[in-house]
Image 1: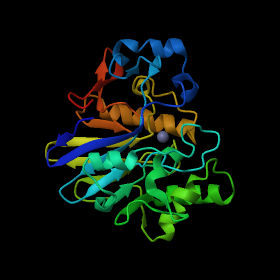
Image 2 (image 1 turned 45 degrees about the horizontal axis):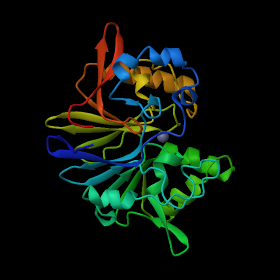
Image 3 (image 1 turned 30 degrees about the vertical axis):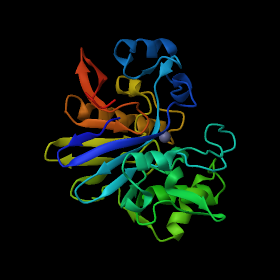
Length: 291
Ligand SMILES: [Zn+2]
């Protein structure tokens, strides 16, 4: 996307992977092809991948530059990580850091990294493989993680229940380097950015709210995976830890933001936009100029 300017803050993004490994009907087990197609009139063309014949999806990082800080929100899959069972994620040699540089940010310039939650596609670039070990990719950054999220995933990892090993290779090394700050789920990062609890997808999932003189935005992580969930918020994803709680959180989020003018930036949506009411329903509308 070209940079979005909101008052004194700019938002750009780095796309690591331009499509999903999972068809929408697999990602959202309660959905049906017919139920999704009923929304094609607004999903096409902005939120559709015609080549894949499915809703568009991204794995991406949002780069937020406030007058105080350069902030990364979610860090994708990462390079050289053993992700057996996920071919698109396994031992990657992607150009993410070059793409970040092209967006005007070197690893040294990153002040804060926020992980909305600790899933494999949100923590990968927290670390990189240097001289035989995983080290923090952003040497000067403070990594902000909700304490509740860390406690949950540390427990899963210690018990051998974390499928990909991403806690061990992408979170623990940053904790051991002393760069992680564990915070409450409503923590204020700076005068512009603050966390908001949005549990369900994972126990400690957070959104990141941006407030500027020119308006608000919210980075909603995996509260929604596919744009169609704006209209069908009862469809939780196959990766939701607590689908019923995720559903309640999503419904509340959609209602609170409908016709609010708040810019929504979801971790996997192909472009930012606004939730709008239309004929008793809800849909997503692309933000102008932010493709
Ligand atoms: Zn995700």
